[in-house]
Image (tube, rainbow, N blue to C red; front, side):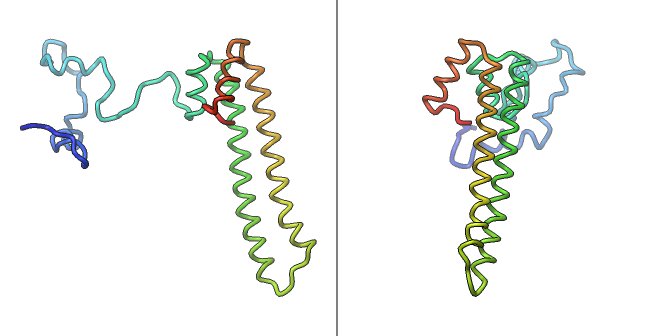
Length: 167
């Protein structure tokens, strides 16, 4: 039977192999002599179904990318992770503030009369939220730059300049 990869994925034996237990490896109970030659390589590579590479840390993509590009050590990775996490949290808060502002603006529009003071009060929440995000991004950049070596700083500047990474 010829296996082909069409628009619906690989042919059925590969698609259903995991469901029938062929993807599960019980090599712990077997010795090298028991394994056929086509199966012996399974202990040295990642699982064909997972599609993931095994890494030394399981974190978000920007941190993984920066860690790979800048060749960060463990302490630098932790400091960058804290800085990026603070920015992520502040951006999530800004998204919630935006939803609240939209709800407040809808309530204001539903009223028969709109005053300029009330409209400015509702819309000023967007400005303060943006300022808080801008402050957190500046703090994160300071923290990341403080954690990097001079060569890593040059590479980080290049990544920012080219748009490969955005903070």
